[in-house]
Image (cartoon, rainbow, N blue to C red):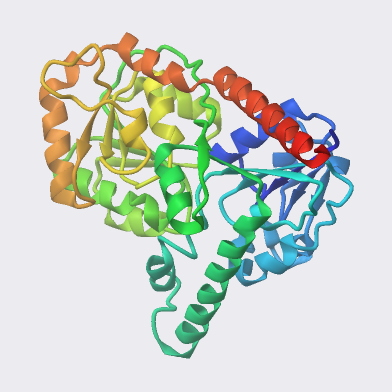
Length: 378
């Protein structure tokens, strides 16, 4: 079973890259095809440099920094990969990876982190955040996104089997592509240090608009409670300028520092509507409860307080992405903070460990590859 791995881009190591790392472990000899990559990140996941094949975008100016600006070229770039010699194509896709060209005798399994957000759910936010919601450039951008939606929908037919990272994502795959998807939750590193709690709340994320770091900063500035922000991104400057003295920005930190801070924090604050959301699970693995926006993947990973369900409860939800709603949730948390049980939090996180992911993926791939081969041989 000659295998190729396809991943959108490999610039930094986040949740989708943790999945890719396990795919590499299952198929250590498989080459990786990706739009743009950082050699250090590839090596960090165990890939040799000669295993990684980048698209022509790799040679564009500052490709590892500006890769999102090259969005209009993603369809062309991903279709240039020549995968005709492989039996199995395993794509890890939240943008364009699933659009690789395949032929009838191959099996293409796509682990879908989300249908392309730029083209679907976040179209209007994308236009506004990039100043493309008006004028000639805005008209051109809308035309391109219309084309991108058509391309994204069409390329779903190039996938034999979809796997979603949550039930929430599976429903979105059906809505956008009209394709069924199995659900295998992504791997979460559940081995965490045990540290004494300190007096601060924690926000960990790339500082991009849909993560709503500005909302969390505004809320804690108003509440006056200590907040530590870990992460970097285009919203960093805006957040720093609006933050009160009770908020500390640490920028990007490596995994060991993040885990230590998660273990020490009173609670993790999570304000995004994510398809899964690994960070809230990592916090629970560190024995830290979660204050989360109650929509998306967290509904499958965080058990909200309801009555006296302290043998299951791992967090508190807020209803709206607004300062007042988050403030209300934080105040509610302060009243029940000491009732959360560290063992309960850790046990819930263990449902999403890496070994479970690896076993389920291995079983799924073997079953689907075998079944398709048998169909072709009949």
